[in-house]
Image (cartoon, rainbow, N blue to C red; front, side, top):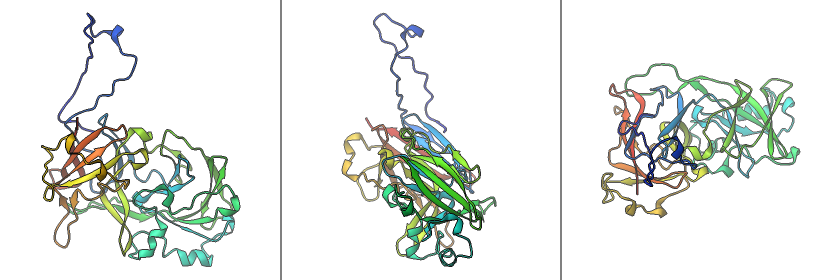
Length: 360
């Protein structure tokens, strides 16, 4: 993350005839909240290969390849599993409970495969993706039961590889080749998860135990490595995620969005938008006294794609200059945040920039 405004070296002196030396180091950590920082998350250009997790209170970011994980196992009270919507995965429940008995020739599999996908323009296909507003109790995979017989096999569409083509200036190339299918079944061992998985026509399966780690929202698994992988920072250490995202269009079902921003609602990071064309307010003049707490919601799409114009026939997407956002981060700090750029100087997508400032 780039801070173009400020670089601080802070020496805290307590003037009881003391000085800034090694003997005066405080025993408690000092949280430095950066004010007026300009940030350019490293989304990675028009293929948007990265998910970028941003922590506002420390002005730090963590970039991970968005195809580096497939499943996320929730660490909270519920036993829920999410799929990777940034590569357009989808999942459908089968009647079977024996994973080894399911194959691509199964009638149920053949009937379900055309439906278990993102972007089919069928309103019913939202059943095959996680609820886009982020409520953990509305995942496409049902709550994992303590009773094995209640945990069915699922047909898993692995989505798409990250695109590699160079698109026309101002456009994106998000998706590459289809990644194929897996079959999975998830059980419980105490509070932990047991993942069974295999290729669709395999007659045996692999199995791995995934433990809950309450320092994180999720523990992540990759079929490529056949093991756990690091994705998100600890749940209190990020506020915003720049990502490709599976959303929904009312009446038309699930649909993929690029240039998307979610907020960490599972750790209480909340956001609301201010439209300066509607409200008598500007980013520069907005103060802490102007914050309306009732406007915060628990929808992780509170920024979403609302910071940009969508474009249309003959018109490319572009930055909205009439909106800014109020953010309540995971530490309880309040900020105002405004997007400065949608592309780089050459007009290439995947180079967002924003400025934010602490409200105090």
